Amino acid sequence: MTQHKLIVSRLPLWLLSLGLLSLYLGVRVLTDLPQVLAVGVGAILLPVALGLAVWRVFVTEGDRRRAYTRTVLEYALVLAAALLYAVQSDKLMWVTSKNIATVLQVSWPALLLLGLVPALVSEMAIASMRHAPTVELWRVRYAARGARIVVLTLIAFAGVNYAAQRWNRKVDLAYFKTSAAGEAVSKLVSSLSQPVRFVLFFPANNDVLEQVQGYVQALMAQNPLLTVEVVDQALNPQLAKELKVRDNGVVALVAGERSELLKLDVDLEDARNSLRELDAKVQEKLLRLLRPARTAYFTTGHAERDYAPLGDDKRYGVGALKGAAEALGFTVKRLGLGEGLGMRVPADAALVVIAGPTEPFLPEEVASLKAYLNQGGKLWLFVDPDQGSTADELTALLNVTVSKSLVMHETLRVRGLDRGDNPYDVITNRVGTHPSVNTLSRAGERYAAVLLGAGAISKREESNKELKVTFTLRAMPDSFLDENHNGLFDAGKEKKVPLDYAAAVEPNVKAMQDGSQADPKNAMRALVFADADVASDLVLGNAGNQYLVMDALRFLGGDEDLAGTVESEKDVPIVHKKDKDSLLFYGTSFGVPTLVLGLGLFLARKPRRKEEVR
Image (tube, rainbow, N blue to C red; front, side, top):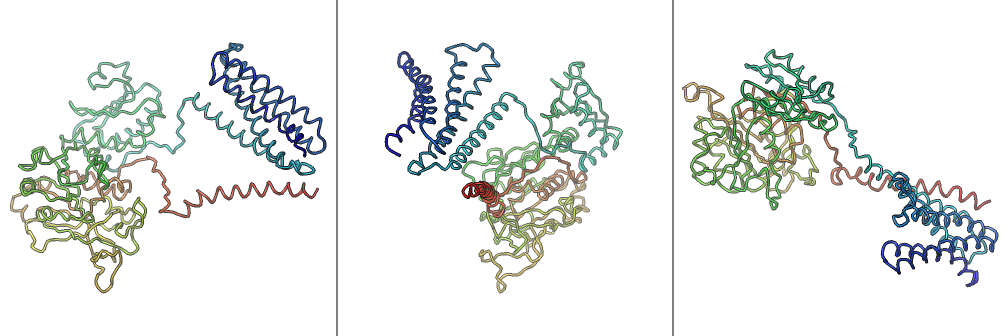
């Protein structure tokens, strides 16, 4: 192809591109006279480009003519897009209907892309064969078709996005079911000794009301002291005012002069998440309604785990543990020197939680805790040996000791959890017979608790005969203490022996018979766990850890009779991680896209070969 013919063949595309650039500068960048000149130049260049594209068809022949013929329609689409933009623009004001203006606003960009991108690709494909005696028409056709597919995909995506913005509604396609009455709530209702009524503030024939009524009616069958009534807040403003209900979509639980409010919603879509956890929420409100006010104090000032950890604390927090305590009716507060721990534990303390301290307690603080226990206090101590602390000044109060070495098992451990393959991340489903592990004990081997860097707990050699130590959570068989911290079992130096992770500490039977503690529920109670992560936010999503924590809180709160499962229909997110399942990770990230691409290339090459033979 001569230089003159080459320039003529490329001139339509150059003029088209220059015309669009000129229109863009005139509309978006320039003002006044330069704007008018730019728009005028663009308005002239686009039709000229289309005319030259048509003229180019008549001066060529063969497959090159057919290839150029295909580009004429694409140039025409670009010109049509420019005309549609002009028609709907605010400058001309030719369109007064808002609906028509909206259609034109979404149509002209689609036409512009549908014409411009295939035109560019087709021109590039033809230009790549400028020295060839003839044009391979199949190459131009496939290039243009690929460009159109990409453009149509973008148009479809933009259309869906635009429609989603205009149709502003939330659609929840997740599994949905209102939680049924669980074992714990059923026991609580069965033990009612005073009337409790559920007042459901909902309009008539409401979908959320129907779900809540089904749940409450199942509870009514267990105790006639529980009653239910349905009230429309607008039709009974006096009762709503007494119960401090300001709108429908609220469940009021009333016992005597006390009441608790459970806020849901009148719209089923908005109430779905609350209905999935209705059983847990009802349990929390019933306990607050029927039990006296109780406060759980979390100690602070000794680098403990916190339910709102500071940014530089890389350990896992205990916010979920705080939430579990609140769900059982506790009000959670902090307790440190500033709150008087150096003198005494507050009188309203129903429970003191010490979550993995790594700095020692002062002698005055230890004395306060000892006095609190002697008066029938309740204490939950988490020791953090993997953080270098065994809290000896605290474990000595409770007649136990925690090893500095960590427990290992060669096979029964958990990996992932953002910690990689840590040899000290172990599991266990072995529990003792004690109220603090009642649910796990009855569940057999269906649930397992996860521990991250746990030590072994044992009774002190200089045993305090006034305290009874019961081991509640045991290590799996063939576990051992990694004495040299190498992450391996050394047969000559280490032994696989029975080990324990947790213990319950109470006054012994003889002391209670002597009359020092007449009521077992008013006696001192303590739990010691040789791992702080067992109740951390990282693992409390595991059912075994949840039941372990909830039963421990019930035991320490004197509610062990209410131990049992809580029903929940909450969706559990499915998370796949690279270090947890590399085959799935790489397969979905690279394997499937590569397979699809390879299949597309294979299907695209078959017709090409046929045409080459032809």
